[in-house]
Length: 360
Image (tube, helix red, strand yellow):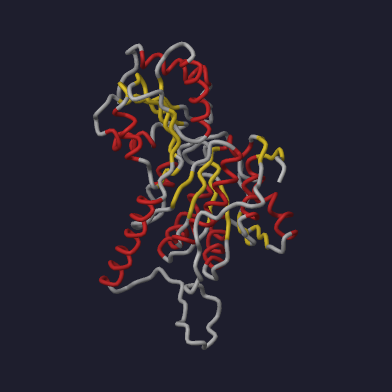
C-alpha cells in the first residue's frame, strides 16, 4: 500500500481497522477527538459499529461488555478521560479481557490544558485503578510507529488477555506524517481459540464462559492474583522493547526519553555529535514492561545520565531503579503544555557535560 499523509489520530484509527477491530466505544475529548471522528465514518464502511457514549465511564463499561464476547474492541481518550475509565480498566484486567486503549496525553493535573504532556506515565504504568494489575503500555515516537504499534497491540491484548495501552502525547495525535499500511503484515503472535469468550451456551459440551473479576473466597482470589502476576512476568520476559543509539562502549552522556521527546533529543544529540561530543540515546518503547536491564547496561557505559520528559519527572523514577546509583542522573522536564526544542535539549546536554547540571 502506498504511503499516505495522515494525522496521528487518524492513523491510529485506521490501524485499529487494519487489525480487525470492528467495535469502538468512546467519548470526545481534546486532543484525541480525531480518533472517534475518523472511526465514526470508517467503521460503518467495513461493517463495524461506532458508539459515542454519554461519558468515558459509560464507554469503558461498554468495552468491558463487548470484549467479553471475544471481539476486538477499541477505545480512546485523553488524560482526565482515562482517569474516569480507570475503574473499568481494573475490571478489564481482573477479568482478563483483551482491549486496546489509546491515551493521547494532554497537560495536567486536573482538567489541565489541551496542549501535549507526558504526565500520565504513573497512571499508565503503575496501575491507575485499584488492585495489583498492569496494562501493557506502548509509546510511539512517530505517526508510522503509532500505526504499527496499534496493530501489534491488538495481537498482544488477545495473546495475554489483557488491556494494552497506546500512550502517545498530544503531538503524536495532531502531527501529520506519511504512513504506510502493509498488505502482507506478518502477525507477531499466534492467537488460539477464544474458549473463554461469553458467546452464548450451546449445550455442546463446552463449559459455561463467565466474565468475572469478583472472588469472595480469599484463597481463590489470591490464586487469581498469582496467575495475573505470572502473566506479567511473561510480559517482562518476552515483550520488552526499546531503541538505542550508542556511540560505542564508552561515552560521556546517556540520554533517556520516550515518545516525541525522544525525537527531539535525537536531533539535539546528532547536532552535538557533529561537534565531537560522545552522547548516546535509549528510548523505551514498552513503558510497561520497562527496559530496566537495557537502561542499566547503557548507563554503565556512560559517565552520566540525563532524562527528558514533558512532566515533573515520572519515568525518572524508573530510570533511578534501573541505574541504582551507579551513575549520576540528571533531569530536564517541561510542564503546562510546553514542548522541549532541540536547541533547549542540546543546551541541557552541554550543561551536564560541562558539570553544571545538578544530579537528582
